[in-house]
Length: 152
Image 1 (cartoon, rainbow, N blue to C red):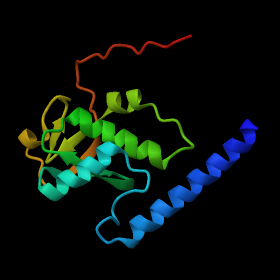
Image 2: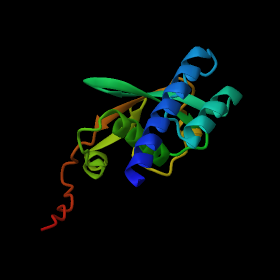
Image 3: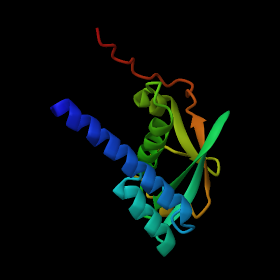
């Protein structure tokens, strides 16, 4: 009996998602709202309309750029979290080691590497339609990095 109700529940969820998607695509004001949007993403879209948030792009050559919304009070850590969320939604077949990515890469804005995760977006000079670049961290001469701990 529980498998029958599970099938009807999944069918009902699919129908509801399809209906939400068609409603969002028909309305010109809601066309840019993703059908699987989180509450945080909906609040960010409202903040853009109120002028409290920015649309920014993350260039990651040779891959396509990522467009995200950040609040003026967001930090570099928040931007990294949004990038992770966006990429994980797109690529479901590959597991990405974000720990490795952020140890070997960083974000760059106007030639400055954003190395401090607690730096606030508005204090860095990031504005509406700013472009951040996904850049590789250079090895500094004479600096030795700690060895990574490998788990057996």
